Image (cartoon, rainbow, N blue to C red; front, side):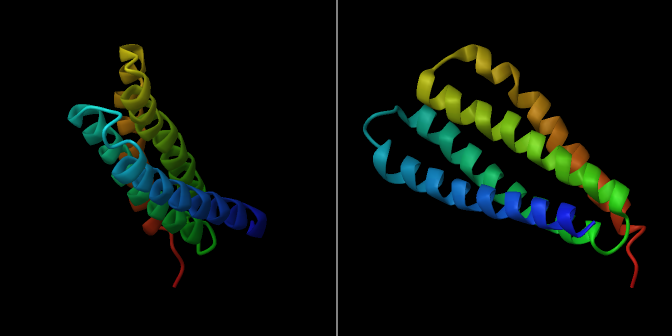
Length: 127
C-alpha cells in the first residue's frame, strides 16, 4: 500500500511542477508566437492540470487512510483526465490539430469521475 501512496504522490508532484512550468511557458515563451485563442487554451490546460495535480495528491493521501479502492480509482481517473484534457489542449494550442480536441471531453469526464470516486473514498476513510 505504501508504494502506491508514494507513486501517486510522486506523480502528483511531477504533474504540479509540469503545470507550473507549462503555465510559465504560456505566459512568457509563447506570447507572440501563438494567437490569443491558443494562449487561452494553453492557460486553461495549465490551470486544470495544476488543480488536478493537487487532486491526485489528495487521492494518494486517501489511499493511505482507508477507502483505498475508491481512492486508487480516483487517482487513476485524475491522471487519465490530466493527460487527455490538459494534454489535448496543450497540443491543440501548439499544433492547431483539431483532431486533438476530440480527446478533451473524455478527459473532462475522467476528471469529473475522479472527483466522484474521491468523494466515495471519503465515505470509507478511517479516523
